[in-house]
Image 1 (cartoon, rainbow, N blue to C red):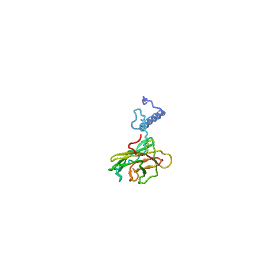
Image 2: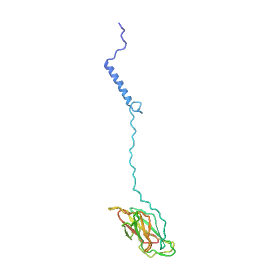
Image 3: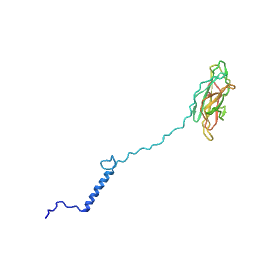
Image 4: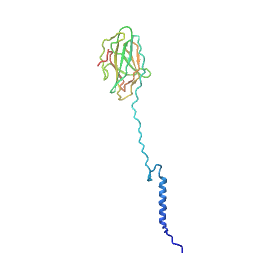
Length: 207
């Protein structure tokens, strides 16, 4: 009679459960991504912060090209300073200099027009009055000796309400009646107002 085995045979049901457990462990090991922890759990992906478009401000206005001062036949030269801005208002100082050899009278107001990019006059209204940025002292007798200068302020508002924008690229300035025009590169961003104000010539800007 053969010797009785010291190991008892497992029931078929237990054998099946053991095989299923081994298969599940193998499946988890295969599906675990690289970088998994020792516990067998997958490491969650590193969150990527969202990106937002960079805010940009309004495009700056064109930078006027400086021009060399010219001396007119009447011995007057006109130059323009930088445009100053304050709360939607703009102003530029014009300086007239006696570049001749004789005294020159510059009493009153310069004849100023706004030009477009082609050099053509734009339909701006020109007034002689004080504004938010420039005080008009009114005309008074003023004679410049050779080398002396006088100033005036040209101002406008950049207010936008309705209608098309009125933006000029230069100012055409006739310093006194009968003289020739001198063109100065000044960007006039007058919004939708279509108006500039010109003060009278004076030895200094009125306060």
